[in-house]
Image (cartoon, rainbow, N blue to C red; front, side, top):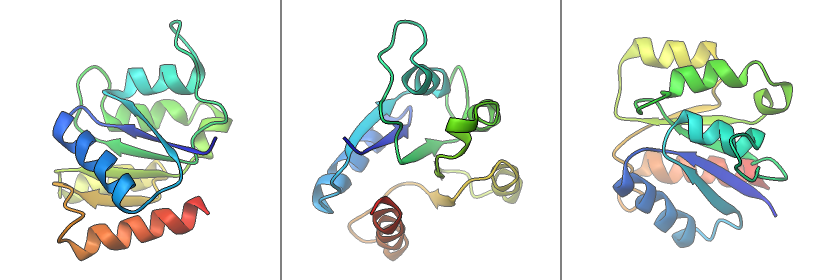
Length: 136
């Protein structure tokens, strides 16, 4: 089954993304992890976690999380060719240019500022449209 991995530590943002997938009828299973370490377990099948197979087509990644943040996660997946190939979209409250530049250097496909508001924000609708095209 085709899938997307959401790496997000905020419960409200996770619920918002799940509702958006339903609203836009995204035909992919949405897996969730609450930090980079949990995401790596899902991707690599480590620490007794059943791996996502096939690998997700897209990763939606928060930057500011406990245990392993988004920048650390991006750096880690660079060591795995099969993970490095997965498009990553950053979702964060940080509009700081330094965060954008660091993420771009690590090969992200897009950068989405939170709060996620799929109801009223044209940028969010555009982002979902981009994701939809990528997932086809």
